Length: 302
Ligand code: PEP
Ligand code: MN
Image 1 (cartoon, rainbow, N blue to C red):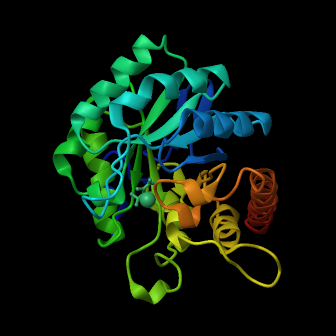
Image 2: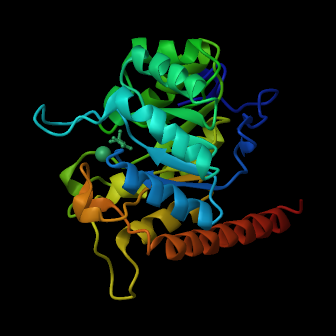
């Protein structure tokens, strides 16, 4: 895999500046660090507001909120869709949440989000999430690439090579939109059992080396369950820290005021009581990364 295959996103001499963009005063590049915690799926107004309030009280300006949910079973909850956008955006504005990661599965969803944001008076902005099941939905990639209003958080495909997923990101960029975050979320295989997916955060530095994209890790979908080790740390914390110690720029994490009542992926949501602990743990991991980077600079005589 050579970086020059990724004509726009690839890191190579003369094309080695980190991609950089900003929404709602929040900047994203290969040096930034943000936790993007929130509901896997929007459910009740009370739970959405409790989540935004908790995030804001801990100094967070980003959140995740799913309105359109791609589900394995057609009989599972599919997300409230367009209907929940107005009040979700209104509540984000009320609590000062400035960027919301929200999955879209078809181009019409982008229009619905744009319209709802405009009607709500532009209280927040949205980062369009392309889920792992749509990493190679090339027509969707071209659509989100052909607009510049919203950045794109592209999940790595869970059953394809890294090369193929990076080319999927290149699809978005090739249509004009370079405001892209690449998200590792684990690979689908039973070799990761009892985790939901096999954690692939060893690729954080690899993706930053091959491309100029900020890199996100999603410990919730990687691990998929509560439970952890005798040191008192849940596996989700351990895995998230592994990504952050390696230089991840964003951490996408499911939280819920009452995980047992979450309509999607209840098993993997952290509680709002655990949120400050998780944020502290991530800050410790980020500090370790900063120290590791300083040591690397010294060792290289920089
Ligand atoms: C999600 O983040 O809500 C999600 C569905 O993730 P993935 O596409 O990685 O399964
Ligand atoms: Mn999910």
